[in-house]
Length: 175
Image 1: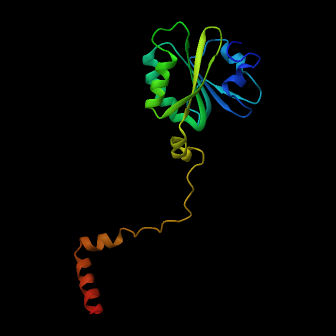
Image 2: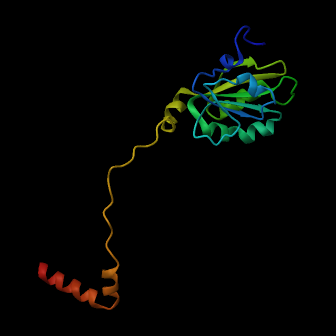
Image 3: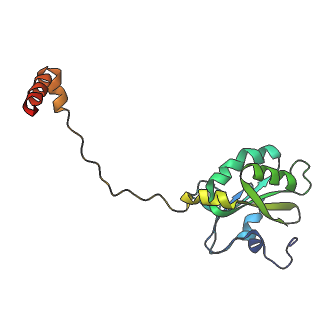
């Protein structure tokens, strides 16, 4: 394992017990290297919130297109790994860091994921993390109940003209 010698890949990527991990465009054998009993691995980004996302990109356009979708599903304290082929000319660590900076994220770790892929871990900045804390807990349910609205019967009475007379009588009685 290149990058962090002696460390298994899940530890390099910050995957811990109970995490929800989403793999996007991952090579065939990559999922088997992360397989553990206590980690939920999926390739579908429609989970409610994901702790770690590992997205493999081949082009800059693909990275830009999927970036906001991934950030929208990421836990505020989660990590978003962007991995690219080391031989890629358009995608590099510098380019990924610039895109992350524009999106309010920061790169805090880089490593070689395997022999042919490099990766950068992106996280939300501290100020943005606090702003996104609403994702952690759902909003409280209001205990206030609505009173039933008035029925349609008074409108029917007004349509026949008797409603205005009733209002006149009430107005006279309050004077």
